[in-house]
Length: 288
Ligand code: PMP
Image 1 (cartoon, rainbow, N blue to C red):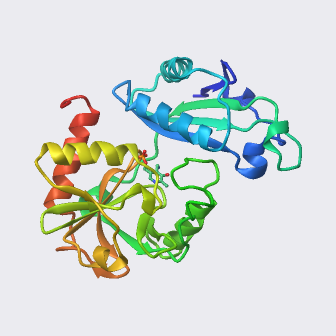
Image 2 (cartoon, rainbow, N blue to C red):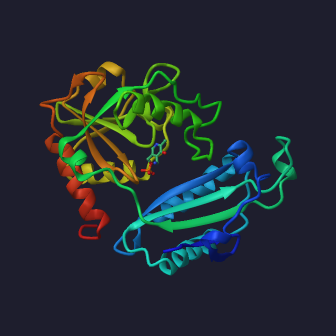
């Protein structure tokens, strides 16, 4: 069924949802976005995603010509009109139509796109068995280059690492920062468990401040587990007891091998499984 897309203030047919070839979102990856889940018709952590979108936009001096509450209403309307019960929303703000030059300030108004659709998930088997990953040789963007905290439309850094993963027949790659510390996976945040303590790299190590990451940290602390934000090395990943990734699409997924080193007993560990279970319950409104 053809979708209804929100474009610049109204819902239009998918076939009519078009953007100029002069849009700087296309020409330069100049814009910001969010990926959001819908569980049982409820939009998951919508306020947090909207907040991050406006913060990303502010960081790159992009005006979103709509208030937060208007954007929230538009997101809900698009989700309802498309009858999405369990799915995925992509919110995109591009710099708008400009010229072939870099100057963002000559662009006409930024453009707002909302797509509410089904979601392509990892197969259930991958959650049961856990995934293998590799360390990417592509270094995560320096915070003074394209700041990893900004969810911009320029994902080439992550795409280059993703290509490395796919070339090695694994779905994900771990990216390290310019100092050699773990930053994040190409589309997920990183967690490990060692001696019963949960560790995750601080955002300053070069990651997006993941909304799933925040929820999982909260759920772990509710279970009286200790969660520490600390710089991690590649060896920390090699010798940990458990390893998992978090993200909007993946939720909580166990990692069982990195660079040929088996983690734990080669299966997702007990803390990973518990947090995945608790996350599922939280997302489906069974536990708040
Ligand atoms: N890091 C990157 C680079 C991402 O693109 C994402 C989102 N897919 C995440 C981490 C996870 O963030 P969130 O939990 O907010 O989806």
